[in-house]
Image (cartoon, rainbow, N blue to C red):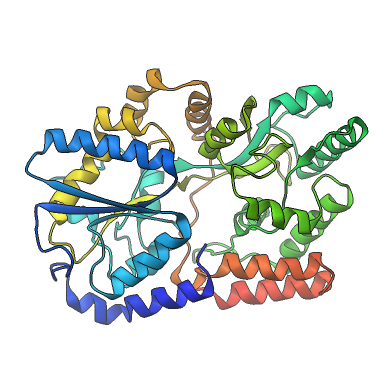
Length: 433
């Protein structure tokens, strides 16, 4: 997530929407005056870098006249560098973009309308509900989703089986079922002297509140025909999260913060020390690799049994700078990375399950067991997903930071439940566009 400092840097870099829009999409980037060179920038770990370089090598073999210059960074440094580059007029030609920030860059004219490249970029076969997540509120398509990531529950089946706890069916389980099952697993582990918990953490993530709100018929960032998350819904979420700690279904709040800081591969779930973890579903691959445990995916628990209201979220997007002189070639490269069978097999589903059904069929025979679980889960959920929420508006870029801070004020006893819920609601209200 962007810190407040990064958010300010972003706003300074992009400037007023009118000023940047006036520059026009054809204003040359200062860093790349060669239209046959495509600067490509992404965030991620070593596995992503390796897979991407392999796919870029395939593109080079097929397009010898185009030079691709790769750049990559870890998550936090990525946004600092991108804001600085944008401010200096040196934004990469083709870049990864995230749901939380696509509106911030897009509404200020920094991202190209991808539908102006339909001669080299064909997105017509992508699942429409996923493709539309890359549109601004005015309908302009500024991001092509690399795949879908569905907020779900990762399950360490080794722990579940060893504990002997009878878990409910994920088609019908509720949040109370999750608390009870997790508490029983924690109790079993304590009796056995094992460093294991039922659920590794809950209650400090904006994505979790958004899911809770959807199940209540509300939205954190509603469209004009939707209902804003209410004070009662926020309070019930905070109250439930505190009850999880009291029931020892999750570690203490301090321990949860430490676990988050430890990182994906060194945290409780990544080291095989928790039975459940909420994550976007393709992340289960990393967790299984790091833990060496057997894992699977379950639906979210629901406030009303059988109604988890899960949604497609673009795992990330490919976008093109509106100032790129290599826009045509960047569009050609984007099309290759999204639709070419060879590139798809090289990239697999590390960035999310592709929204092109034909590409899913192409890669399926090459997937291992956990990758197949991810693919099948995404396919199955398409029959159940709720309408896709609007992307985070520019005004809401800092919400996740605010929510974490304000929820912790309640968990640590610095605010009452009612006061904390009101503080969060006021924050949300102030971020509506």
